[in-house]
Length: 397
Image (cartoon, rainbow, N blue to C red; front, side):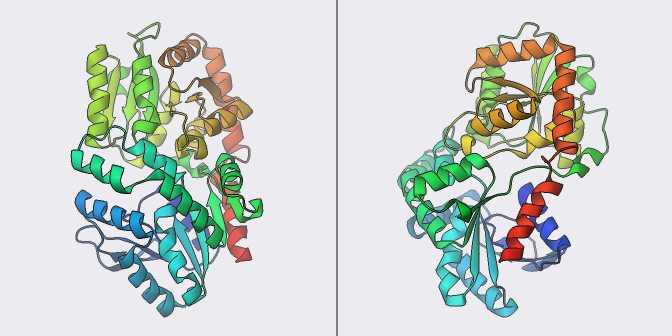
C-alpha cells in the first residue's frame, strides 16, 4: 500500500488493513515519516516503511507541486521499487489519486497489479479545500499548480491504466463510468461504513457536562470549507429556542478554517455554539450518543456528492437522528433508511427549520434514531458486511 501521509492515518485505511490481515494477507505500507519515527516498524501486523518527504507545510507543498507537474513522486518511486523487489509483492493498493502515477510508472516494469482506491473526487476536492486559505503563497501555489482540470484528465488516464478502481460510494462509480467512458465492472464500491464494535467504546457521561438539560446538535470530525459547518453556525441564528438548542463542534481544521468559523460566531453574536477542538476517536461514540441530533451539513458540490463520511454510519449506530444536507450520498442513505431529516445544502434557514422540527418532536427523533440503528447494526450498512467486498476483490487478484 502507498499512503501520502504518516500512518496511522485515515480510519478507512485502518479498517481495510484490519480486514486483509485477518484474511491472511501480508501487508507492506509505504508512507511518510514523522519526526523521530523509525524507518521501518511493525504496526498492528503491518510492515510499515517510512520515507522523508515532507515534515512541514512547505515541504509538503513542494511535493504537491512535483506530483501536479509529473504525477510521479520520485522518493516514493525509489522506495517502492526496492520494497516490491525485495518482498516479491504482486499487488499494489494506492490510497487516493496523487500517488497513482507513482505505482503505475512501475506497473509494467515489475509486473504488479494496481488497485487505485479513490477516497474522494480529488480534482473537485481541489476546488473546495483552498476556499478559505488566506496565506498568499499557498493561494499562489494552488492557483499555479493544483489545477483541477488537469487532475481530471490524469484521473481518466490513471483509471484506464489501473487494474481495479475502488470508489467509496455509488455516486462516485456512476461519475467515473459516465465521465471517463469505461467498463463499470472495473469499479468496485467499498463504502465508509463503520464496524459494529464502534458502539463498544466506553461511554463518557461528562462530555457535555456544561450543557446539562440542553438540546444538543453535535458535529464531529474534520472541518473544512466543504463540510458546511459554517451553514450550521449561521442556521443557529434562526432557531426557535436559542437558549435551549446548542451546536457543539467536535474536531478541528486549519487555522484559517477555524478562524473563519469563530469569526462567524462572533459576527452573529451566538452564545449557543461551542468549539471543543480535537478529541480522541475513543470519545466519538460518547459525543454522538449523548447528543440529541448528529449533524452532517456538507455543501453539495463535485467533491461532497461523490464521497461519504464515516460519521454518517457512526451516528446512525448510536440510535440518534441524523440531520444531513441534500448532498447526494447523504440524502440517499438517510431517506432510504428513514434515519433522519434532510435540509437543502447551503440553506441556513432550512437547516434551522429542520432543527426545530426535531426539537419539537421527541417521538420523531426516537423513530428516526431507531431506524438508523436497525439499518447499521441489524442490516447491511456496517463494515462487517462491506469488508467482504474488499476481500472478494483481493481473492480475484
